[in-house]
Length: 200
Image (cartoon, rainbow, N blue to C red; front, side, top):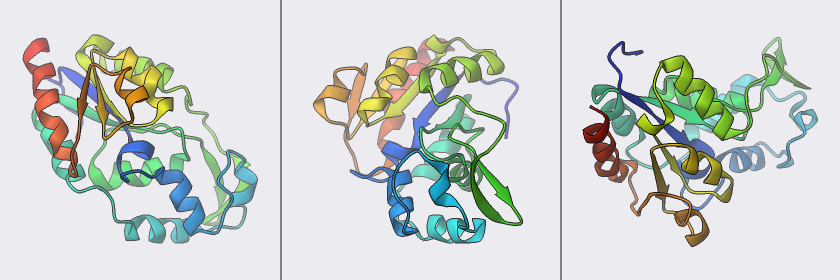
């Protein structure tokens, strides 16, 4: 879905935005009976099929597909940004049409996670990831937006031209350029329309 005539990008903090009030990666780990921590060892033996089944069964925020579709039509490349596990972000990218994703890689062998970190390493610093991806897309960070809700999203919201705090607490809202409340991801589109008007 890559567009030659894109004018910017939107970084969606998928762990913090796609499940209202819950961290997506931690929720998935709990459903799989795993500890919610950054150690890949506790994934040992979990099958990729089991992970996909859990992800496909999740009740996610409405409007994700419609929002990524709108981004593509509007010349904004949608990107899934995550500080969680890369296989989760990869599934979301495939399912909803995100251009690319970031996350902690997990090694797999014969359809199961080995419990070791995978390669290649992807940036876990969301600000660094956004800067690298924007550079690869040939757009300045000022022509990009970010949608986040967790305190860890602060550097990402601050790095881009339009930082959108979505259903976020006050400390996150203070780091963003605008705040949006809603029960559907499409409620961020008016704020993104402001970005497209500015950079066209």
